[in-house]
Image (cartoon, rainbow, N blue to C red; front, side, top):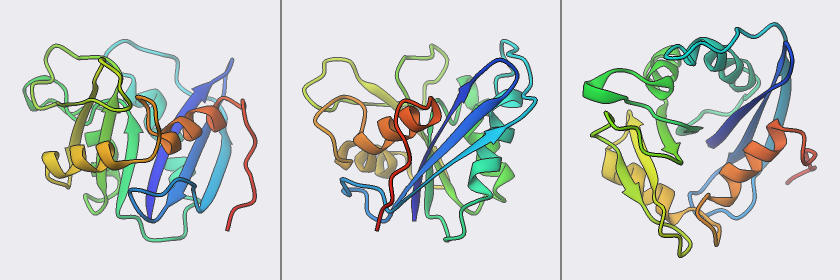
Length: 171
């Protein structure tokens, strides 16, 4: 199973969402999960992982199926091999599940990011990975469904976390 995850923050809590699917080219998820996480850390520049990582782990703890990969909104690796959110998630998952980072903007120090153009957009996504070859990860993101820059299922996880859409009965 592959998971797209995202988190939205409210006053003192957050909503974490997960869209599960089996194949990189799937147009629809097989299952969706949204959970509330109370008392999240305040935002701290350079320490975003302290806020986001517990939320991602909370929603992933609700996944019973074995995971092949988790796709996060952001970077796996920052400059000069420094761990980003995705690398810390990879470590927290016991280095047993690949984590792919899909960032919408360039991080100057992230030299290992592969730019991926999708959907006729001239603005690339920046893909990083742990536990999977980087070029393979970039090809997977390129192959995901959606006519726009952001893959459909990654966009769905974002919208679910923000409460803009509701979980649908799938399957």
